Image 1 (spheres, rainbow over the protein chains, first blue to last red):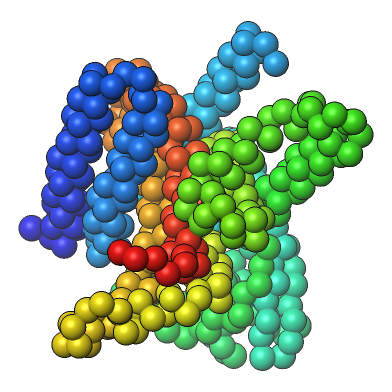
Image 2: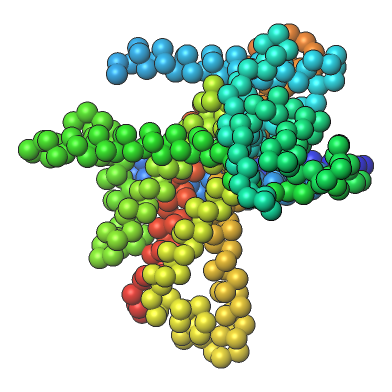
Amino acid sequence: MTITGIAALGAGMAVIGAAIGIGKIGESAMNAMARQPEIQGKLQTSALILAAFVEAVALFGVVAAIIVS
Amino acid sequence: MTLNTLRAVLFLVFSVTIANSGFAAQEDDNEDNGFNATEMIMHHVKDAHEFHIVDWDNKPISIPLPIILFTDNGLVTFMSSEFNHDDSGSQIVEKNGERFVKYHEKIYQLGSGVDALAFDEEEHPTNATLPLNFSITKNVFMMWVSVLVLFLIFISAARKYDKSTNFIPRGIASFTEPLVIFIRDEVAIPMIGEKKYRKFMPFLLSVFFFIWINNIFGLIPILNGANVSGNIAFTLTLALFTFFITMFSGNKNYWKHIFWMPGVPVPMKIFLAPIEIIGMFVKPFSLTIRLFANITAGHIIILSLMSLIFTFQSIAIAPVSVGFSLFILIIEIVVVAIQAYIFTVLSALYIGMATAEEDNH
């Protein structure tokens, strides 16, 4: 496997982690919204912010992969 | 603006996007099957010395930008059109007895008696030097454009308040006021606190609107998606602003928490201080990478979806890849606003940590 291939694999693995993280955020946000529909707006914003944080970690991996390859 | 005009504008923007990405991808497709997706994407994500709009009949149509170099013998200026769209280092421009070539969007100064670039194993030129480059590149130019647009928006909004007698926002002010209020009530006050937030509002608002407008301009393809906020130098500069503001507004309490944490046993204090000091520098670093990576990744995804058509050399792929890039573009419209917001929230959070009063925790 070439270094580019390994880099691509690494980027993919970083994305797996982020997918799990964003999935869990979505799950708990939906749960909370179902329990308390009146604070839906606030939950939505914080869920989006948290998703952006998790996504950033995956993007660190992707950037590292781009730099290496 | 009614909903219908809005819809028309959005449709126009999207169709131009699709058309432009298509053309842009096409330009590298001149040699049969020699399409290199990575090269095309990198070319679009990186900074450039000219505005390359489209290739028409194999002739590139572009807007030249000024090149300002500082060599050993002083200042050298010329327009980038003198390179004749060459990026492989074969077109030599001679000014003031010095000769320059452009290779991979970098301008090299050839040594005396050298007529062509020579490369080492990693394709770095070995017989040329890099002069100090202060050129007005695509990114610099777009940054100025966005500064100008911001000035126009906010000066006219401020004028509206000057004229009105009852402080009810009208015109452009009715668009900017909710955003300013949002940053004040949802970001500055909760993060920094009722007493001290006023001093930091100008910085937070400037950062928010500047990042947002640069992100939006990055998505407009006719400007060839100048990737300003996807440039690591740009994001690093913004993060350093936050860093220095945090440093200089940090109170006694903040520094005590970094170097000699109260209420912790002494061995633990020695152990924690280095971690806190590293954390101090990690914060601006993560701000830098987050914005850079998010925006660049968005551009790369859209361009990769577009280049699927040329990789497969088939028109059957086109609807799929156009549909997907439309989808990603719509997500990107949300993402660019969220990223500007997150940068602002985190800046406010760091400033808030530095200025917090001592409390009993």
